[in-house]
Image (cartoon, rainbow, N blue to C red; front, side):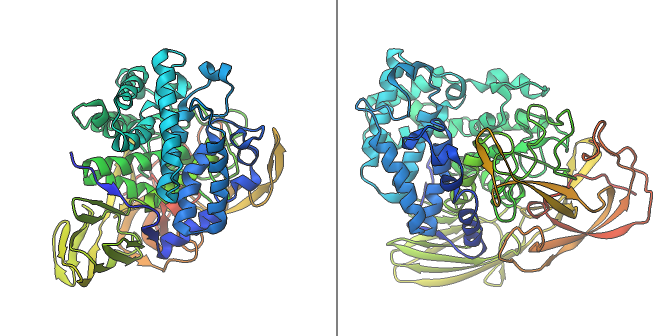
Length: 602
């Protein structure tokens, strides 16, 4: 199976609204965690006394590519400060995590796998020639300790064993030494076989387990794609079986798997953890690169354009731990939490609304998405994600001018310094495709000769689709955008300190208090979208770039038993209690309070 290759952050740069989205992230929480959050600012990874486990590696996994994609010298210097400290503290035997020798057997080595992956990211971005040796010594030490029985995989490391294959593949390409494949086999043999847990995914419980942990499962989907070659195993496309079971019993319309924090079923008032969104995106990026199956690219962009922005405030200084499809308020639950395994504040927008993993980890979403926009192999360059960006290599320059997914028109300008084939992936939902004004069908390929310059204008239409959801509810999508009924709200800012962690504007907590109606059923949705233009905030909750008109009818929906800020899982009645009216639907990622899954009312 021939694998598509990624371009580096030196070659591929965001443009247009996509660059602005990344700038917002850089100006917000992800770009400032090392200044405001003690688990990064004072981490044991750089000699401090705060967290010495996953949080700094998680943060660097997004912060590093963001810094280099934006060519932000201040952020690049700050990334270098952390990476210099981490590499300088590597032990003589190769151990790299901030853990005393005698404590290694009880140290969950999930972070060994994670920091090794981050080192690969740093090398791809910086070209720092110290890094390959650090990766080699880290993984060789890991092999020595595991093979000798000094340590073993357990807990998170056991359930995330496949994450180590990012670094192992990096090393195999450069060294091809036997111990690399032996370590690959040890990781799989000591790692979790998720097939043994499939039965647990069908009946979610109010119980925390590694087997049903949503982030473990999101990561797991790429296990075979990243591991089969080093293991010498045939690729079986096992992901389809695993994902099929997960989605049959735990799906959400925004493309996420429901899990607040463990699998949560099909209810529109349970949630999806933000870590799972960005890890699902990363899994789909690698699945597409390894298989070339268009489904993974379409799933990737659907997550990026819907679930990812939905879980962040407009300025990206705050985020939710859990997002809900039908989310009529983000107010602390009184007494008993609604979520299966998360607390009563997990849906608030804040610095650290549940656990700090999402605080550290969500930043990888946009940078890695951008780096998946173009892929290449065997003399072919593919536009995988039709988003605004520019690719510059010694062989070619390609720019993409577009406001996709808000408008379905792309202008490609190609300059070939060397002959190559250019390919454009066309979404399966594209209708009435035209290339340079002429009707066309399917993926497009163009052969360019050395010295040739070409402009390609591509456009297509999309249709409104009704997504049938459980409990006889429906959601509306058009192309790669999911739409929802927005609920007006006001915010209640909360500044305080808890467990030594300060919440202070702009990285404080917010409750979103509804100030509008939400109890409706769909009657009809117009087929045409209204494009309003992309503002300085692409997924603005106040100025959405595109909208849909819908006809709805008031119904007696009611509240979930025991709550007055959560709609019932299903409407109490689907009988109209008022006159039909026209409302404006927003893209799901723009509607922070929203009703996404509604009944059809005749």
